[in-house]
Length: 207
Length: 370
View 1: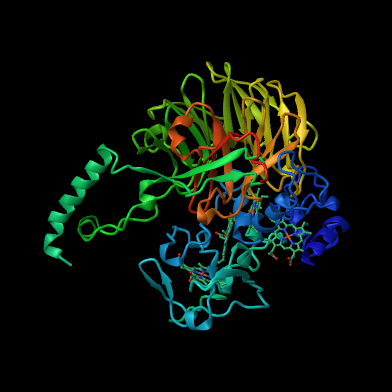
View 2 (view 1 turned 60 degrees about the horizontal axis):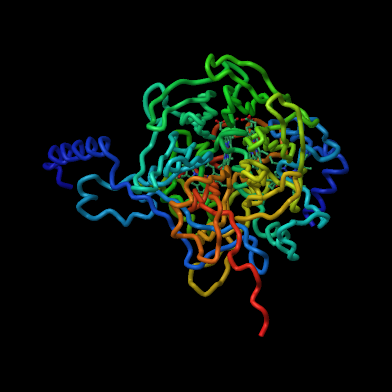
């Protein structure tokens, strides 16, 4: 469903869409010919899903290529961002997805080292202070606002670790929780961080 | 705790630190393999590539520090224990060289005596963001650094020799040396700068930003084939281009997509002696093989990095090597006739350096049904 939306937008002419046109004016317009109408601007992140018009000469079994497509290609989580923010194409974002907060080494600039790929947890987990390296951080985490500013969490199926094969859904904070590529706002933030406004949307300042 | 002992402990720490600098500490390198061989493409296809093992620094797998060690040196910092964020890789004379962009150095793993050291971490040759590395025929190691915005040159023992670089509009993603010329892939200007090896002067610039043949859009890696042609991974044109040393385009293949002949995000590239081209597809977590004409042959890698069975996570660079197969002989399946090594780096996950071999199955005929 959502794929159809993207494809449709890519080919109908994304520039007319107010909410996505920002890409064309921002640092994420990486197309060499600025061919917005053909979705060139969107391709670096939204790869067009191909049909089966080609195959491998050495592996002609059905499904070899398709299987990879389904489970290997990076989703919209932080890994997508990391694929280019690798220190070569764009500045490296030093965070490591999947690290737990306990072993997440804090950089000197917190805003650039925010943990990603971590479960936001339920309200009982967030009731106290946040566990950080060498202690706990003051400030209670509240539910991220669902509207203004809109800070989405991303669901991710994981094994619950009980050995029974039960899957649970985590609601993770990813790069796209705070950033959105579809904007021309400063630092591609979903909301300005003036006076740490973005941070206190989740971290309340009281103890 | 034990405040009165703190002076004594400090001295102990200093001794340990000094000893640690003088010689590499307990530098065992681990090669971690699967119990049963993993082949690509999977059966019933004819196997062409075997996953051999993952290389790790010993500390990645080291047991918890004992209480005495904890008492003396405190908790060992975890941040520097693993290869942090590798990109380029090279292998020469029994040693695997990994450019660790996250730890700002080159990790050298001596596979013969299982020792590790680092180079490029002090003095004028101190690295900041080493990306791709290349050994010239004369044995010099060339390193492209995207924060120093220079190409640095070292002797294999780590002695710094010299640096190449422009003052502006220069971000070297990759480097290679061919004959008397040094080629630098400048991702900032989407072109290739060619320098004279002796004078270090810029001789010519190949290509410019664009979509036509011979033009590039975020080229990330390149490799030399045995005909002396250069294969460029033209990342955000989602294609591979073959050019000659004057920049004349000879061949293009691939476009954006996720089918066998297309790329979601091409990065690292390598060519074997027969002309088979290896291209990392970073987003698909695989390495694709193409023949000389650009026809897709197969892929290997995929998800499953956690299990260490040949899976890749944000793979960056691929290289092939014909000289060091012996180092990994013990991992090669008896049924497999290995011809050369393939090394792939992953920027994230548990398995940052994966070793594969290209070859053919020794069993020629399939067993007939009884």
